Amino acid sequence: MKGEVEHRQSSFEPQAGRGTISRFLEDDHRRLDALLKRASAQPGSIDRAAYDEFRRGLLKHISMEEKILLPATQRVRGGEPLELAAKLRLDHGALAALLVPTPTFAIIRAIRSIIEAHNRLEEGPEGVYAMCEELAGPEAEALLAQLKAAPEVPAAAHVDSPKVIAATRRALARAGYSESLLDD
Ligand SMILES: [Fe+2]
Ligand SMILES: [Fe+2]
Image 1 (cartoon, rainbow, N blue to C red):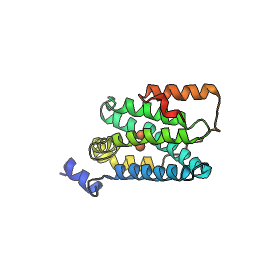
Image 2 (tube, rainbow, N blue to C red):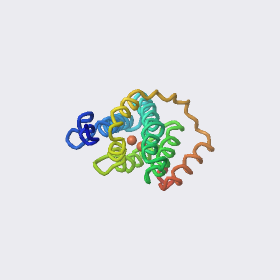
Image 3 (cartoon, rainbow, N blue to C red):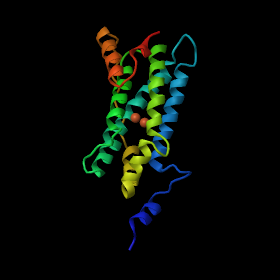
Image 4 (cartoon, protein in one colour):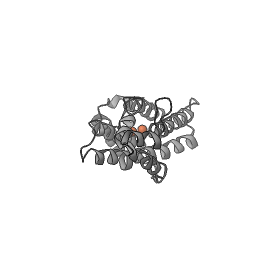
């Protein structure tokens, strides 16, 4: 009879300590990092094509985690969410809020500093991705297929009202970041 461990090894081939779900989502982090870097590479003007691609990509990435990865992990834990899930969702809320106004260099700096801290929670052998992958066990391959098939998230037009800026500052504060991240 095929044991569960044996099954995991045969259906799932971790490379250099990184499983397939981790690799897929960490590669997406690198792709988004590169787009954000390109968006702000020229002093004085933001590369809007790069930023728009980053914005669409980040919304999709967040949706993959919130709609597919975290719920699947919660299911295999008998309905109990990961301890870090609430913090990840607050970070996602702050990031999504920062994507609403028209980008400025201050907004890009704030996004970058949140993403750096956030990705450290998700990546690596002790990170959330590795945890989710481990918990998924033999379901990991199917979960990866779902992540790969995730739909694009339609990005709404930018809104720059004082209300939006205030909401963005509140989302930063709720996630534990200083509102001064947004100061020029
Ligand atoms: Fe995330
Ligand atoms: Fe992520």
